[in-house]
Image 1 (cartoon, rainbow, N blue to C red):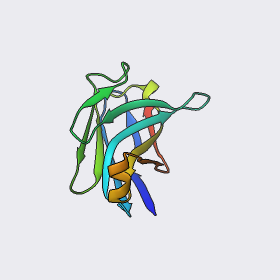
Image 2 (cartoon, rainbow, N blue to C red):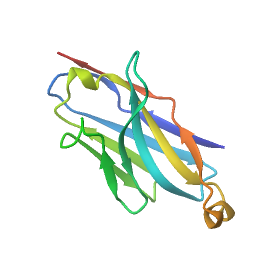
Image 3 (cartoon, rainbow, N blue to C red):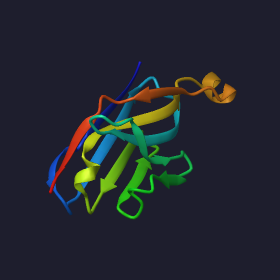
Image 4 (cartoon, one colour):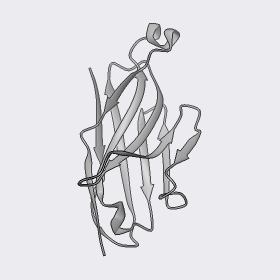
Length: 125
């Protein structure tokens, strides 16, 4: 089976920085896109940032210029560097990945989607 494990959440003051990490492990042939989502209480889960296997990125408008997503295709990890944090960034952050468990899945372009358990980020004003 595949696991995504996030780390790096915590409490930070407004204007501060945090770095989230996500490590994928298990039966993995290759990983297509990796992404970070977040969900604040009472809100729907929303996409924060996404990065393809080739390194193309896209960001939510609310985090552009403040957050940077990166990945290591050898280590099967992804990171989210968050700077100039605001109280409205407070949420549970989830790692997400589209990945292939076998070469057959890759040939057929049928990735499976996985979620991590989430890590809490709290930004105080």
